[in-house]
Image: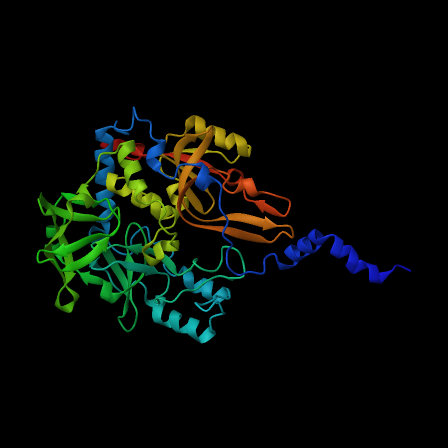
Length: 461
Protein backbone atom coordinates (compact mmCIF):
# COMPACT_ATOMS: atom_id res chain seq x y z
CA UNK A 1 0.00 0.00 0.00
CA UNK A 2 1.52 3.39 -0.96
CA UNK A 3 2.64 5.75 1.79
CA UNK A 4 0.15 8.66 1.44
CA UNK A 5 1.94 10.71 4.12
CA UNK A 6 5.02 11.12 1.93
CA UNK A 7 3.21 12.91 -0.94
CA UNK A 8 3.24 16.42 0.55
CA UNK A 9 7.01 16.10 1.06
CA UNK A 10 7.40 15.20 -2.63
CA UNK A 11 5.52 18.33 -3.63
CA UNK A 12 7.54 20.36 -1.15
CA UNK A 13 10.75 19.18 -2.78
CA UNK A 14 9.44 20.14 -6.22
CA UNK A 15 7.73 23.54 -5.83
CA UNK A 16 7.65 24.07 -9.60
CA UNK A 17 5.07 21.27 -9.83
CA UNK A 18 2.80 23.23 -7.50
CA UNK A 19 3.34 26.36 -9.61
CA UNK A 20 2.39 24.57 -12.83
CA UNK A 21 -0.74 23.13 -11.20
CA UNK A 22 -1.76 26.59 -10.00
CA UNK A 23 -1.23 28.05 -13.47
CA UNK A 24 -3.44 25.38 -15.01
CA UNK A 25 -6.15 25.82 -12.39
CA UNK A 26 -6.28 29.59 -12.65
CA UNK A 27 -5.75 29.94 -16.42
CA UNK A 28 -8.65 31.77 -18.00
CA UNK A 29 -10.27 32.79 -14.69
CA UNK A 30 -9.72 36.50 -15.21
CA UNK A 31 -12.43 38.36 -17.11
CA UNK A 32 -10.01 41.11 -18.18
CA UNK A 33 -7.77 40.66 -21.25
CA UNK A 34 -4.21 40.23 -19.93
CA UNK A 35 -1.59 42.72 -21.04
CA UNK A 36 1.73 41.45 -22.35
CA UNK A 37 4.67 43.33 -23.78
CA UNK A 38 4.54 42.45 -27.48
CA UNK A 39 8.08 42.21 -28.81
CA UNK A 40 7.23 43.85 -32.15
CA UNK A 41 6.39 47.11 -30.38
CA UNK A 42 10.04 47.38 -29.31
CA UNK A 43 11.66 45.70 -32.31
CA UNK A 44 9.89 47.63 -35.07
CA UNK A 45 10.03 51.45 -35.26
CA UNK A 46 6.64 52.83 -34.23
CA UNK A 47 6.95 55.69 -36.71
CA UNK A 48 5.52 55.29 -40.24
CA UNK A 49 8.06 57.83 -41.49
CA UNK A 50 10.85 55.37 -40.63
CA UNK A 51 9.64 53.06 -43.43
CA UNK A 52 9.85 55.62 -46.23
CA UNK A 53 12.18 55.36 -49.19
CA UNK A 54 13.78 58.80 -48.99
CA UNK A 55 14.39 58.95 -52.74
CA UNK A 56 10.73 58.31 -53.55
CA UNK A 57 8.93 59.74 -50.53
CA UNK A 58 8.05 63.07 -52.19
CA UNK A 59 7.13 61.64 -55.57
CA UNK A 60 3.40 61.39 -56.46
CA UNK A 61 2.07 57.92 -55.72
CA UNK A 62 -0.42 58.14 -58.60
CA UNK A 63 -0.83 60.40 -61.64
CA UNK A 64 -2.61 63.69 -61.05
CA UNK A 65 -5.31 62.67 -63.53
CA UNK A 66 -6.04 59.55 -61.49
CA UNK A 67 -6.28 61.48 -58.24
CA UNK A 68 -8.73 63.94 -59.80
CA UNK A 69 -10.94 61.03 -60.85
CA UNK A 70 -10.84 59.57 -57.36
CA UNK A 71 -11.54 62.92 -55.68
CA UNK A 72 -14.57 63.51 -57.91
CA UNK A 73 -15.84 60.04 -57.02
CA UNK A 74 -15.26 60.80 -53.32
CA UNK A 75 -17.35 63.98 -53.46
CA UNK A 76 -20.10 62.22 -55.40
CA UNK A 77 -20.42 59.62 -52.65
CA UNK A 78 -20.07 62.21 -49.88
CA UNK A 79 -22.98 64.28 -51.22
CA UNK A 80 -25.13 61.36 -52.41
CA UNK A 81 -27.55 61.63 -49.44
CA UNK A 82 -28.63 65.05 -50.74
CA UNK A 83 -29.10 63.93 -54.34
CA UNK A 84 -30.37 60.35 -54.18
CA UNK A 85 -33.72 59.03 -53.08
CA UNK A 86 -33.95 57.13 -49.83
CA UNK A 87 -33.34 54.47 -48.77
CA UNK A 88 -29.82 54.67 -50.20
CA UNK A 89 -28.36 51.65 -52.05
CA UNK A 90 -25.71 51.20 -49.33
CA UNK A 91 -28.36 50.66 -46.63
CA UNK A 92 -28.64 46.93 -47.11
CA UNK A 93 -29.77 45.62 -43.68
CA UNK A 94 -31.33 48.47 -41.69
CA UNK A 95 -33.17 46.22 -39.21
CA UNK A 96 -30.60 43.42 -38.76
CA UNK A 97 -30.41 44.01 -35.00
CA UNK A 98 -34.07 43.05 -34.51
CA UNK A 99 -33.37 39.45 -35.51
CA UNK A 100 -30.15 39.41 -33.48
CA UNK A 101 -31.74 40.48 -30.18
CA UNK A 102 -34.68 38.11 -30.73
CA UNK A 103 -32.52 35.08 -31.47
CA UNK A 104 -29.64 35.56 -29.01
CA UNK A 105 -29.04 36.37 -25.38
CA UNK A 106 -27.56 39.86 -25.33
CA UNK A 107 -25.65 41.41 -22.46
CA UNK A 108 -25.83 44.98 -21.20
CA UNK A 109 -23.38 47.47 -19.73
CA UNK A 110 -23.35 45.51 -16.45
CA UNK A 111 -22.31 42.39 -18.43
CA UNK A 112 -25.53 40.64 -17.42
CA UNK A 113 -28.29 39.43 -19.76
CA UNK A 114 -30.61 42.23 -20.85
CA UNK A 115 -34.19 41.82 -19.66
CA UNK A 116 -36.68 40.79 -22.34
CA UNK A 117 -38.96 43.77 -21.67
CA UNK A 118 -36.09 46.17 -22.29
CA UNK A 119 -35.31 44.46 -25.59
CA UNK A 120 -38.94 44.62 -26.67
CA UNK A 121 -39.13 48.31 -25.78
CA UNK A 122 -36.23 49.02 -28.13
CA UNK A 123 -37.92 47.05 -30.90
CA UNK A 124 -41.09 49.07 -30.35
CA UNK A 125 -39.12 52.32 -30.40
CA UNK A 126 -37.44 51.37 -33.70
CA UNK A 127 -40.88 50.77 -35.29
CA UNK A 128 -39.28 49.21 -38.37
CA UNK A 129 -42.64 48.01 -39.67
CA UNK A 130 -43.12 51.58 -40.92
CA UNK A 131 -39.61 51.94 -42.40
CA UNK A 132 -39.02 53.98 -44.52
CA UNK A 133 -41.30 56.68 -43.15
CA UNK A 134 -39.27 59.75 -44.22
CA UNK A 135 -37.16 60.96 -47.14
CA UNK A 136 -35.55 64.17 -45.92
CA UNK A 137 -32.12 65.75 -46.24
CA UNK A 138 -30.12 66.78 -43.20
CA UNK A 139 -26.61 67.44 -41.90
CA UNK A 140 -24.80 66.59 -38.67
CA UNK A 141 -24.20 69.56 -36.37
CA UNK A 142 -22.32 67.49 -33.78
CA UNK A 143 -20.29 64.32 -33.85
CA UNK A 144 -22.83 61.51 -33.66
CA UNK A 145 -22.70 57.76 -33.14
CA UNK A 146 -24.74 55.60 -35.51
CA UNK A 147 -26.56 52.87 -33.60
CA UNK A 148 -28.23 49.65 -34.72
CA UNK A 149 -31.13 50.41 -32.36
CA UNK A 150 -32.30 53.76 -30.93
CA UNK A 151 -30.34 53.61 -27.68
CA UNK A 152 -27.00 54.86 -26.37
CA UNK A 153 -26.65 51.84 -24.10
CA UNK A 154 -24.42 48.96 -25.28
CA UNK A 155 -25.40 45.41 -26.18
CA UNK A 156 -22.69 42.74 -26.13
CA UNK A 157 -22.41 39.12 -27.09
CA UNK A 158 -21.36 36.74 -24.30
CA UNK A 159 -18.63 38.68 -22.40
CA UNK A 160 -17.20 35.44 -21.00
CA UNK A 161 -15.84 34.64 -24.46
CA UNK A 162 -12.72 36.21 -25.94
CA UNK A 163 -13.50 39.10 -28.27
CA UNK A 164 -17.19 39.22 -27.30
CA UNK A 165 -17.51 41.64 -24.37
CA UNK A 166 -16.21 45.18 -24.00
CA UNK A 167 -15.48 47.11 -26.20
CA UNK A 168 -17.45 45.20 -28.84
CA UNK A 169 -20.81 46.93 -28.50
CA UNK A 170 -22.82 45.31 -31.29
CA UNK A 171 -25.14 48.30 -31.56
CA UNK A 172 -22.29 50.64 -32.51
CA UNK A 173 -22.09 50.95 -36.30
CA UNK A 174 -19.88 53.99 -36.79
CA UNK A 175 -19.56 57.68 -35.99
CA UNK A 176 -19.96 60.75 -38.19
CA UNK A 177 -18.24 64.11 -37.68
CA UNK A 178 -20.11 67.41 -37.76
CA UNK A 179 -20.98 68.72 -41.24
CA UNK A 180 -21.69 65.32 -42.82
CA UNK A 181 -24.54 65.24 -45.42
CA UNK A 182 -27.37 62.88 -44.44
CA UNK A 183 -30.51 61.22 -45.68
CA UNK A 184 -33.15 60.71 -42.96
CA UNK A 185 -35.50 57.83 -43.77
CA UNK A 186 -37.19 57.01 -40.46
CA UNK A 187 -37.71 58.21 -36.90
CA UNK A 188 -38.79 56.81 -33.55
CA UNK A 189 -42.44 57.38 -32.54
CA UNK A 190 -41.41 60.08 -30.04
CA UNK A 191 -39.12 61.83 -32.56
CA UNK A 192 -36.10 61.54 -30.25
CA UNK A 193 -34.16 59.36 -32.71
CA UNK A 194 -33.77 59.50 -36.49
CA UNK A 195 -32.52 56.83 -38.87
CA UNK A 196 -29.53 58.26 -40.72
CA UNK A 197 -28.18 57.04 -44.06
CA UNK A 198 -24.95 57.96 -45.86
CA UNK A 199 -22.82 56.29 -48.53
CA UNK A 200 -20.49 55.26 -45.72
CA UNK A 201 -22.71 53.97 -42.92
CA UNK A 202 -26.22 54.02 -41.52
CA UNK A 203 -27.97 53.77 -38.17
CA UNK A 204 -29.91 55.58 -35.47
CA UNK A 205 -28.74 58.98 -34.21
CA UNK A 206 -30.20 61.39 -31.64
CA UNK A 207 -32.37 63.99 -33.37
CA UNK A 208 -30.46 66.71 -31.50
CA UNK A 209 -27.31 65.86 -33.50
CA UNK A 210 -28.79 66.78 -36.89
CA UNK A 211 -30.43 69.73 -38.65
CA UNK A 212 -32.68 69.78 -41.71
CA UNK A 213 -31.40 71.24 -45.00
CA UNK A 214 -33.15 72.70 -48.04
CA UNK A 215 -32.12 73.45 -51.63
CA UNK A 216 -30.62 76.83 -50.72
CA UNK A 217 -28.46 75.29 -48.00
CA UNK A 218 -27.25 72.49 -50.28
CA UNK A 219 -26.30 74.98 -52.99
CA UNK A 220 -24.42 77.16 -50.50
CA UNK A 221 -22.58 74.19 -48.95
CA UNK A 222 -21.51 72.56 -52.23
CA UNK A 223 -18.99 75.23 -53.19
CA UNK A 224 -16.70 72.89 -55.13
CA UNK A 225 -13.72 73.91 -52.98
CA UNK A 226 -13.17 72.07 -49.73
CA UNK A 227 -10.73 71.80 -46.87
CA UNK A 228 -9.59 68.36 -45.71
CA UNK A 229 -8.82 68.13 -41.99
CA UNK A 230 -5.39 66.60 -41.39
CA UNK A 231 -5.16 66.64 -37.58
CA UNK A 232 -7.41 64.87 -35.09
CA UNK A 233 -9.25 67.04 -32.61
CA UNK A 234 -9.23 70.09 -34.87
CA UNK A 235 -11.31 72.80 -33.19
CA UNK A 236 -13.86 74.68 -35.31
CA UNK A 237 -14.98 78.05 -33.94
CA UNK A 238 -17.14 80.86 -35.24
CA UNK A 239 -15.71 84.26 -36.15
CA UNK A 240 -16.12 85.44 -32.55
CA UNK A 241 -14.13 82.52 -31.19
CA UNK A 242 -17.06 80.48 -29.90
CA UNK A 243 -16.39 76.75 -30.05
CA UNK A 244 -18.53 74.75 -32.49
CA UNK A 245 -17.06 71.25 -32.77
CA UNK A 246 -13.94 69.11 -33.03
CA UNK A 247 -13.18 67.27 -36.25
CA UNK A 248 -11.09 64.16 -36.95
CA UNK A 249 -8.67 63.52 -39.79
CA UNK A 250 -10.63 62.98 -43.00
CA UNK A 251 -13.41 65.52 -42.34
CA UNK A 252 -14.43 67.97 -45.09
CA UNK A 253 -15.62 71.58 -44.87
CA UNK A 254 -16.42 74.16 -47.57
CA UNK A 255 -13.34 76.39 -47.84
CA UNK A 256 -13.74 80.14 -48.34
CA UNK A 257 -10.11 81.27 -48.08
CA UNK A 258 -6.97 81.07 -45.95
CA UNK A 259 -5.55 83.98 -43.98
CA UNK A 260 -3.01 84.71 -41.26
CA UNK A 261 -5.58 83.63 -38.66
CA UNK A 262 -6.13 80.21 -40.25
CA UNK A 263 -8.59 78.70 -42.69
CA UNK A 264 -11.95 80.39 -43.22
CA UNK A 265 -14.62 77.74 -43.72
CA UNK A 266 -18.38 77.27 -43.61
CA UNK A 267 -20.00 75.24 -40.84
CA UNK A 268 -23.57 74.12 -40.13
CA UNK A 269 -25.46 75.04 -36.98
CA UNK A 270 -29.05 74.30 -35.99
CA UNK A 271 -31.44 77.26 -35.98
CA UNK A 272 -35.04 77.29 -34.78
CA UNK A 273 -37.04 74.23 -35.76
CA UNK A 274 -33.75 72.35 -36.22
CA UNK A 275 -33.25 74.01 -39.59
CA UNK A 276 -29.62 74.07 -40.71
CA UNK A 277 -27.93 77.43 -41.06
CA UNK A 278 -24.45 78.10 -42.51
CA UNK A 279 -22.07 80.40 -40.67
CA UNK A 280 -18.51 81.60 -41.19
CA UNK A 281 -16.03 79.61 -39.11
CA UNK A 282 -12.28 79.16 -38.64
CA UNK A 283 -9.83 76.38 -38.00
CA UNK A 284 -6.07 76.69 -37.33
CA UNK A 285 -3.91 76.91 -40.43
CA UNK A 286 -1.82 73.80 -39.68
CA UNK A 287 -4.80 71.47 -39.26
CA UNK A 288 -5.93 71.09 -42.86
CA UNK A 289 -5.31 71.82 -46.52
CA UNK A 290 -7.13 72.08 -49.83
CA UNK A 291 -8.87 68.83 -50.77
CA UNK A 292 -7.48 66.56 -52.08
CA UNK A 293 -4.03 66.61 -50.50
CA UNK A 294 -1.26 65.54 -52.92
CA UNK A 295 -0.86 61.78 -52.56
CA UNK A 296 2.79 61.05 -51.77
CA UNK A 297 4.31 58.47 -49.41
CA UNK A 298 5.56 61.30 -47.18
CA UNK A 299 2.12 62.89 -46.87
CA UNK A 300 0.52 59.51 -46.09
CA UNK A 301 3.20 58.67 -43.52
CA UNK A 302 2.85 62.10 -41.90
CA UNK A 303 -0.89 61.64 -41.37
CA UNK A 304 -0.38 58.06 -40.18
CA UNK A 305 2.20 59.33 -37.68
CA UNK A 306 -0.53 61.43 -36.05
CA UNK A 307 -2.66 58.32 -35.53
CA UNK A 308 0.00 56.21 -33.85
CA UNK A 309 -0.76 55.08 -30.31
CA UNK A 310 -4.39 56.18 -30.44
CA UNK A 311 -6.74 53.96 -28.41
CA UNK A 312 -8.79 51.28 -30.13
CA UNK A 313 -12.45 52.19 -30.54
CA UNK A 314 -14.86 49.57 -31.88
CA UNK A 315 -17.20 51.28 -34.34
CA UNK A 316 -15.43 54.58 -33.53
CA UNK A 317 -16.81 54.48 -30.00
CA UNK A 318 -15.54 57.09 -27.52
CA UNK A 319 -14.18 59.17 -30.40
CA UNK A 320 -11.56 56.54 -31.25
CA UNK A 321 -11.07 54.26 -34.27
CA UNK A 322 -11.09 50.58 -35.07
CA UNK A 323 -8.99 49.01 -37.84
CA UNK A 324 -11.17 49.99 -40.82
CA UNK A 325 -11.86 53.52 -39.52
CA UNK A 326 -8.11 54.16 -39.28
CA UNK A 327 -7.57 53.05 -42.88
CA UNK A 328 -10.55 54.98 -44.19
CA UNK A 329 -9.71 58.26 -42.43
CA UNK A 330 -6.06 58.01 -43.43
CA UNK A 331 -6.89 57.95 -47.15
CA UNK A 332 -9.89 60.33 -47.10
CA UNK A 333 -7.91 63.63 -47.22
CA UNK A 334 -6.33 62.42 -50.48
CA UNK A 335 -9.72 61.89 -52.11
CA UNK A 336 -9.67 58.08 -51.92
CA UNK A 337 -13.08 56.84 -50.81
CA UNK A 338 -12.97 53.57 -48.89
CA UNK A 339 -15.95 51.70 -47.41
CA UNK A 340 -16.46 51.62 -43.66
CA UNK A 341 -15.80 47.92 -42.91
CA UNK A 342 -12.71 45.81 -43.49
CA UNK A 343 -14.33 43.19 -45.76
CA UNK A 344 -15.46 45.83 -48.24
CA UNK A 345 -12.18 47.74 -48.05
CA UNK A 346 -10.43 44.52 -49.06
CA UNK A 347 -12.42 44.50 -52.32
CA UNK A 348 -11.07 47.87 -53.49
CA UNK A 349 -8.36 48.15 -56.14
CA UNK A 350 -6.39 45.21 -57.51
CA UNK A 351 -7.06 42.13 -55.37
CA UNK A 352 -4.37 39.46 -54.99
CA UNK A 353 -5.69 36.27 -53.31
CA UNK A 354 -3.31 34.65 -50.81
CA UNK A 355 -5.42 32.04 -49.01
CA UNK A 356 -4.16 29.11 -51.12
CA UNK A 357 -0.53 29.76 -50.16
CA UNK A 358 1.35 28.49 -47.12
CA UNK A 359 1.65 31.10 -44.33
CA UNK A 360 5.30 31.92 -45.04
CA UNK A 361 4.57 32.16 -48.78
CA UNK A 362 1.80 34.69 -48.12
CA UNK A 363 4.27 37.00 -46.43
CA UNK A 364 6.83 36.51 -49.20
CA UNK A 365 4.20 37.39 -51.81
CA UNK A 366 3.36 40.55 -49.88
CA UNK A 367 7.04 41.51 -49.73
CA UNK A 368 7.46 40.84 -53.45
CA UNK A 369 4.33 42.51 -54.84
CA UNK A 370 3.03 44.84 -52.14
CA UNK A 371 3.38 48.60 -52.66
CA UNK A 372 4.36 50.29 -49.38
CA UNK A 373 1.64 52.65 -48.08
CA UNK A 374 -0.76 51.63 -50.88
CA UNK A 375 -1.43 47.95 -50.06
CA UNK A 376 -4.12 46.69 -47.70
CA UNK A 377 -3.77 43.27 -46.07
CA UNK A 378 -6.91 41.44 -44.99
CA UNK A 379 -7.62 38.76 -42.45
CA UNK A 380 -11.27 37.98 -41.61
CA UNK A 381 -12.58 40.85 -39.51
CA UNK A 382 -9.39 42.92 -39.71
CA UNK A 383 -7.51 45.17 -42.14
CA UNK A 384 -3.89 46.39 -42.13
CA UNK A 385 -1.74 48.77 -44.19
CA UNK A 386 1.52 47.38 -45.55
CA UNK A 387 4.41 49.80 -44.86
CA UNK A 388 7.29 47.85 -46.37
CA UNK A 389 10.09 45.53 -45.36
CA UNK A 390 11.87 45.61 -42.01
CA UNK A 391 14.65 43.13 -41.31
CA UNK A 392 13.39 40.94 -44.19
CA UNK A 393 9.87 40.77 -42.74
CA UNK A 394 6.67 42.60 -43.65
CA UNK A 395 5.72 45.57 -41.45
CA UNK A 396 2.05 46.59 -41.16
CA UNK A 397 0.19 49.46 -39.52
CA UNK A 398 -3.12 48.58 -37.88
CA UNK A 399 -5.43 49.46 -35.03
CA UNK A 400 -5.33 46.24 -33.06
CA UNK A 401 -7.44 45.20 -30.09
CA UNK A 402 -5.37 42.18 -29.12
CA UNK A 403 -3.26 39.17 -30.04
CA UNK A 404 -5.14 35.87 -30.13
CA UNK A 405 -3.99 33.22 -27.68
CA UNK A 406 -4.97 29.69 -26.73
CA UNK A 407 -3.96 28.13 -23.42
CA UNK A 408 -2.98 24.54 -22.63
CA UNK A 409 -6.63 23.56 -22.24
CA UNK A 410 -7.64 25.06 -25.60
CA UNK A 411 -9.37 28.13 -24.19
CA UNK A 412 -9.07 31.19 -26.42
CA UNK A 413 -8.00 34.56 -25.07
CA UNK A 414 -6.49 37.91 -26.05
CA UNK A 415 -3.34 39.72 -25.09
CA UNK A 416 -4.46 43.31 -25.04
CA UNK A 417 -2.83 45.82 -27.39
CA UNK A 418 -5.73 48.26 -27.79
CA UNK A 419 -4.15 50.92 -29.98
CA UNK A 420 -2.76 51.83 -33.40
CA UNK A 421 0.62 50.13 -33.77
CA UNK A 422 3.16 48.83 -36.26
CA UNK A 423 3.90 45.10 -36.09
CA UNK A 424 4.98 42.22 -38.23
CA UNK A 425 2.61 39.42 -39.19
CA UNK A 426 3.54 37.39 -36.10
CA UNK A 427 3.07 39.80 -33.18
CA UNK A 428 3.74 38.15 -29.83
CA UNK A 429 5.13 34.98 -31.42
CA UNK A 430 8.33 35.28 -29.37
CA UNK A 431 6.24 34.19 -26.37
CA UNK A 432 4.74 31.13 -28.05
CA UNK A 433 4.99 28.01 -25.85
CA UNK A 434 3.21 24.70 -25.20
CA UNK A 435 1.28 26.46 -22.43
CA UNK A 436 0.27 29.54 -24.47
CA UNK A 437 -0.16 29.32 -28.21
CA UNK A 438 0.06 32.65 -30.05
CA UNK A 439 -2.09 33.27 -33.11
CA UNK A 440 0.01 33.68 -36.27
CA UNK A 441 -1.60 36.36 -38.46
CA UNK A 442 -0.02 34.81 -41.55
CA UNK A 443 -2.26 31.75 -41.23
CA UNK A 444 -5.33 34.00 -41.48
CA UNK A 445 -4.23 36.40 -44.23
CA UNK A 446 -6.65 35.89 -47.12
CA UNK A 447 -5.70 38.62 -49.59
CA UNK A 448 -3.95 41.87 -50.27
CA UNK A 449 -5.27 44.67 -52.46
CA UNK A 450 -3.37 47.43 -54.18
CA UNK A 451 -4.76 50.96 -54.03
CA UNK A 452 -5.92 53.25 -55.49
CA UNK A 453 -8.68 51.76 -57.64
CA UNK A 454 -8.57 54.14 -60.62
CA UNK A 455 -9.69 51.35 -62.94
CA UNK A 456 -13.17 51.50 -61.39
CA UNK A 457 -13.93 54.50 -63.60
CA UNK A 458 -12.50 53.79 -67.07
CA UNK A 459 -14.99 56.16 -68.71
CA UNK A 460 -13.60 59.11 -66.77
CA UNK A 461 -9.95 58.58 -67.68
